[in-house]
Amino acid sequence: MYAPYAPIAFRIRLMAESRARMALQLFDRAFQAQKQGDLELAIQLYKQSIELHPTAEAYTYLGWTYHFLGRTEEAIAECKNAIAADPSLGNPYNDIGAYLLELGRHEEAIPWLEKATVSQRYEAYHFAWFNLARAYLRMELYSRAKSCLEQALDIEPEYRSAQEALDRVRRLIQ
Image 1 (cartoon, rainbow, N blue to C red):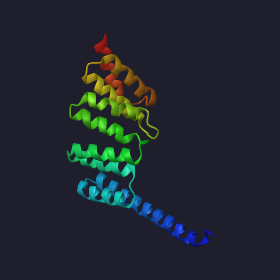
Image 2: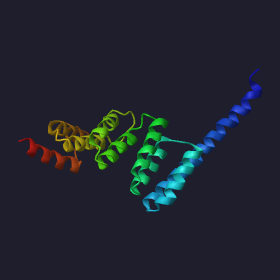
Image 3: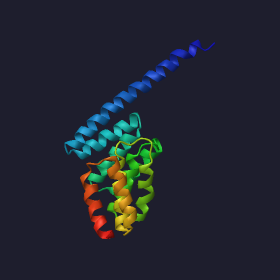
């Protein structure tokens, strides 16, 4: 009864896999263009990758590229697209928080950074803890900043920026 539909389902799956492979190739080319400083080409390639197979990573890196061009609000928007595509990825939460810190919107950054610290998929939790500490420092909440910096260093003991910031905070608290 279902046999006539199997070839169609199989072709659909193969097409989806093919689109995903092509999207990954475009993503890799975009990342290379970004590393080489060709940000406009990187933007085009990330967008093409997203058109073929949207991923949180592609949206996040597109946002990162916009940020390098000073287009911070567009960067934030792309990170929100990344979160909509895959809310488990921590990078876009951290990036939104970092961008908001740069814009002087410290309190607004905190919920985003907190989400990054508990996200399911993130290879650099120490960055989120460090950025959360930056927000608290700007708000003169030194004990909270100290705690966040200690968390960052628990995760990445060699994180020099966090160690230097922790040393400064300890001097402020004394």
